[in-house]
Structure formats: C-alpha cells, structure tokens
Image (cartoon, rainbow, N blue to C red):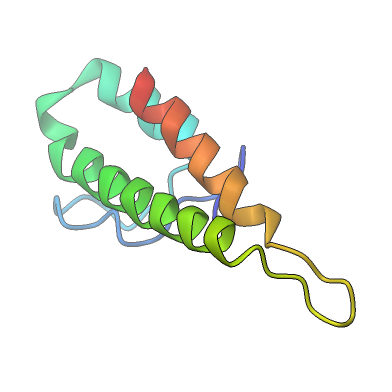
Length: 89
C-alpha cells in the first residue's frame, strides 16, 4: 500500500481521468481545488480505509506471532494511519 510519496493504486480511474498515479498528498491537493470532481476518488480512499481498519482489527484479535518471530505486518497500521490522516483533512 502507498506511503508518503508512493503512488496510490491505479484504481483511481473511475472518474475517467488520465491513468496517472497519485499519492495521497497529491490527491488531497487536487481535491482542494475541485472537491466535487474527485468524489469517486474520495469514496475509493474511504473504502480502502475501511478495509485497512478491518485488517488491523483482525491482526489485533489474532495477536499473531509465528515460530520465526515475525509479528503483525506494520504496513497495515501505516496504511490505516495514512488514510485516516487523509480523510481527517
């Protein structure tokens, strides 16, 4: 999943825009200029947030640690945090 400066999923094309990849900060900037024009992208980020939240909850419930000492995937928490910050703004 994307982190700061890393492209957002290519699924941001339902609006019919060019297939450019957008980071969350770039999308946030574009949404400030044209909020109505980026409604489908906002809904996509909200859906991704909901999915990340569900994964985070499942990891917490499992409190999984393998024999090799590998614990919960930190990217899930990072993705959840980034999307929460995006949606809060």
